[in-house]
Amino acid sequence: QVQLVESGGGLVQPGGSLRLSCSASGSLFTMGWYRQAPGKQRESVATITSLSNTNYADAVKGRFIISRDNAKNTVYLQMNSLKPEDTAVYYCSGRAALSTITYWGQGTQVTVSS
Image (cartoon, rainbow, N blue to C red; front, side, top):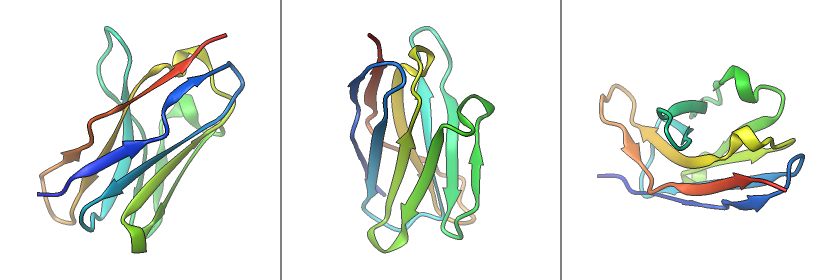
């Protein structure tokens, strides 16, 4: 069982930036961020493997950057040029290589509002 702990959410004005962090209690091959807005399904935001292969949702390309520190089992999401539609609960996720089990963090609220 791997535990994921997120931090860094909060309230920010449109156009602002936030950085989310997620620390895992063990090593995971793929780590990523998902988000869920009220009344909507959870959606993938960005993922990164331990080989630094990344994938982004079209809605955040060019604005968000995912990175990780493998030595610390930590993944980051730098969010720039935030928009009100980015408002959601952001969840960290992780999966070991060749595993079908996905681990989830507890979620952190990001609110973009003036």
